[in-house]
Image (tube, rainbow, N blue to C red; front, top):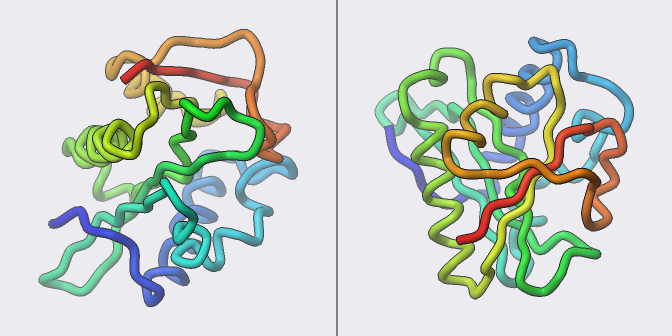
Length: 160
């Protein structure tokens, strides 16, 4: 398995992974990325300056296993990017790919000139939240930026 940059042909598989994961955890609510049309064309979204999206891919079997990215979300301070749309298929979880993916995102954010990374999550995704904690993300008392995901009730930040 490799972690590589997103390609246009990845869009459909990634949108499916995001929606299926949210359904799996009962988190497919209005106000989440589940209803965000942008997930249907992630490769286009991440052409924005100072953003990237990485894909976990089983190149041998030509299968997309998940992904995650860094994005300069509107309303965040100029030194802060958001860790976004981090989702992995069940067979990929617990094998270190999430940690590797997050670390690759954090490294990109630092190289892109950010000094902080913000994220939003929800109680239903407690496994991911535990990983964020272990990687040094701290809880915030309120959301930041204009993410459009009003259902998310967990907000975290990490200085990089």
